[in-house]
Every structure is written in structure tokens, then in C-alpha cells.
Length: 64
Image (cartoon, rainbow, N blue to C red):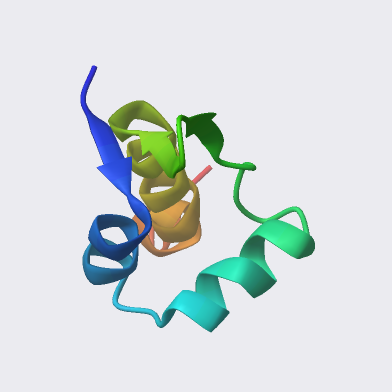
């Protein structure tokens, strides 16, 4: 597992720091873990967020 800083998460999601803060406050993204003075997220959490974000798009057009 790799740890991602706020800047790395924002870059990978294509959002601003304020956008990330809003997502965390709304419960759409997990709270960071503090390691010393740094706030970090696991690469696993970031991957899960991306999978959830694209789930509907990937299901589009499939027949039940």
C-alpha cells in the first residue's frame, strides 16, 4: 500500500484542495490519517473512490 498526500490525491482526482475537503466533509471520501503533521490517504482508498465514481458509467449499456 502506498500513502498519498493531499496534493497527490487532488492531482489524481483532478480536484482542488477545497474540493477534497468538501468531499471528506460530505462523507464522499474518507478522513485522512495523520502521520506526524502530514495528512495521508492510502492508495487503496483512492482506488476505491475511483471505482465507485465510474461504476455507473461502466454498467451503462449492459443488459440485466
